[in-house]
Length: 107
Image 1 (spheres, rainbow, N blue to C red):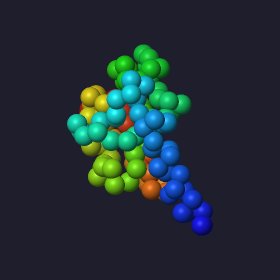
Image 2: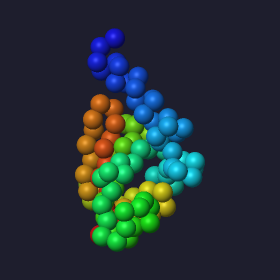
Image 3: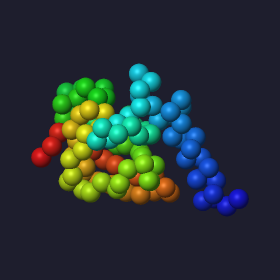
Image 4: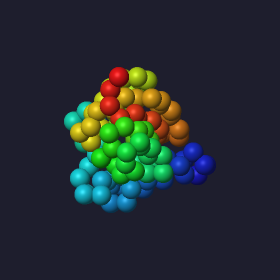
């Protein structure tokens, strides 16, 4: 097994809803109303008024989603993540995972 194969095998563990990919409430995350496996990077949440997700009126949020779970979002597109509107600031693909930076609200 090479390194890329090992990473692919680990992606399923990373996106296990019982480990990292679920919400604290146990509910799945949603993207435009569809249930998806996603991991939030709480160390990258930024807000003017709050440090808690999802109750912040402005700020950024980094979301990791397996490639293929959603269509690759376009920069500056507006999506509903977990019921709140966000604008896509940036999308990168890294070893089978979309790294999506979202800004709260829409332009």
